[in-house]
Image (cartoon, rainbow, N blue to C red; front, side):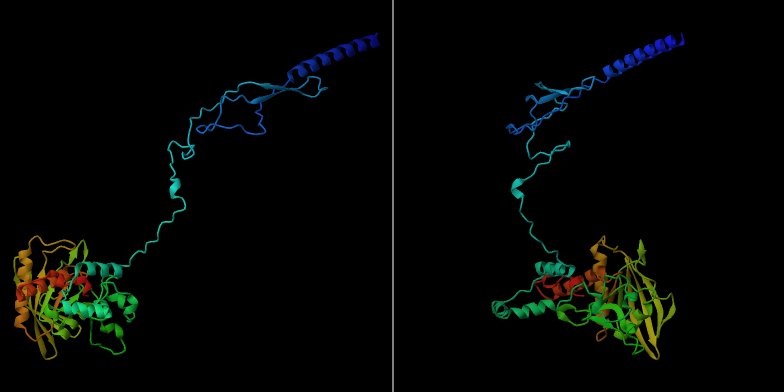
Length: 385
């Protein structure tokens, strides 16, 4: 009885396992996705298309036998496989993968852009001078220049530019006395203070240059920067040393930033070895005039100080008449002080409004001294210092 029951259970188990195996093998039938066969040799494509959707690719159908006893059956069939992408005809010169077309100029390949040297600031100034300045030559002078061109070249090279390499000024720590680090005095024409100490070269330095006047008169003007807190004593030492009769100040003390310090006293002040006394103050329409007396020991000097404030930095005066009147007053004082030193002119940097004032003053002399005035006979004043 027991043996019979065990045999029945074994038969049922065997049938059950067979049934499970058959169901499992039915589910193991695998249909692979169509695989595109690459042809041995590519067929010719049209000139305007990168994809050939009308060409029927060759497809492999692989079926695995449920029993696994036979090799897969391979059937070579041909059918149309629709491309999942729609490609528009494009040329080789058009960039793909972007909504922006990139057109290549095939004719420019291999061309090299010519090298262009960037001129230095000094070269730019020289070129501007050559284009704006002139010196009229007679026929005989022109022949001499052609015969000896190096003379003309040397004459031009003697004109100092407004860009100075700090290495050209062999004075240690001179940068502490410059209001702007890029605006330096030209070594050939700079004002040298008499040293208080022969071993201290810095005491001889001030950011100022001598400027020639009308008809090439030497040291007619001194162009300088607005005094700083640490150069006020140097400024008054220069005025005393050069015996200057007039000081022209063309800047406010502050225009957004500091342009100049208040370097004169209200009544009396001592700056180094120079004592400055304010005798009186006259308020004019567009400038203020102060009569000063400078003292050093038993010696005295009379100086007029003009403070013109109607000329903003990097701009032009609203009217030319006050500026011309200022020039006439300064010239009158200079003539009344014949035999004395140069007129000191300063703004903030000493090259903008200062240069314009000096150039205009020279131009006025030229127009009065000759019936044939030519403004091109004078190079831009920034070339001169």
